Amino acid sequence: MNKEIIAKRYALALFQIATEKQLLDQLEEEIRAVWQVFAENDKFLSLLTYPKLSLEKKKALIKETFAAVSSPLRNTLLLLLERHRIDIVPQLAEQFIHLVNEARGVAEATAYSARPLTEEEKRALSDVFAKKMGKTTLHIENIVDPSLIGGVKLRIGNRIYDGSISGKLERIQRQLIG
View 1 (cartoon, rainbow, N blue to C red):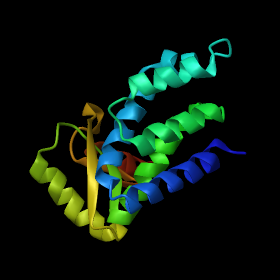
View 2 (cartoon, rainbow, N blue to C red):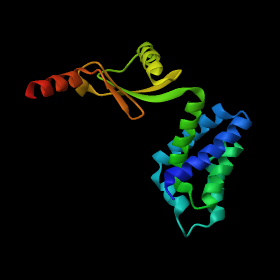
View 3 (cartoon, helix red, strand yellow):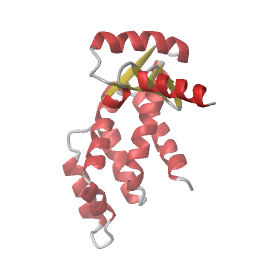
View 4 (tube, rainbow, N blue to C red):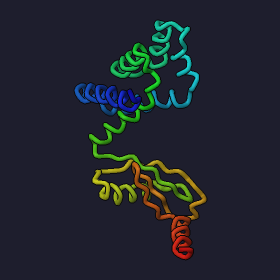
């Protein structure tokens, strides 16, 4: 079965538990931290999937590493470990955050700009584009890309809104060349 489908099932179960126990904000923060641990430490996942290391030692490693996280998340990680699915943690985190955002009417967006955007500029982008997407707000991550020359390119899901100068120049060039 596809990792995305499996991750979505675990994420949905964790989301339901978080909703029932009113731990949504806490679990979202914790799962982002767990995701970061897995993303930044390839050797950690390698260790957890190493066949010669006993399951008990792997469980102890999870319990020790994630001692500060809430029990629903820690138990989910232990369950994934037992079922040999610990490698889906990044996908699970992504799916969980997506579910939380959907419940809140929030969308994740990436804004590419020639210079860092101010909080006011991010808020203005969020206000304008959230309405277009039918959301209440956007969480905007700003990535500085000097090749844009000026303006902003905004990616929300699989949609890209290109208001950059380099994008406009490319469109003009295509029109002139035909």
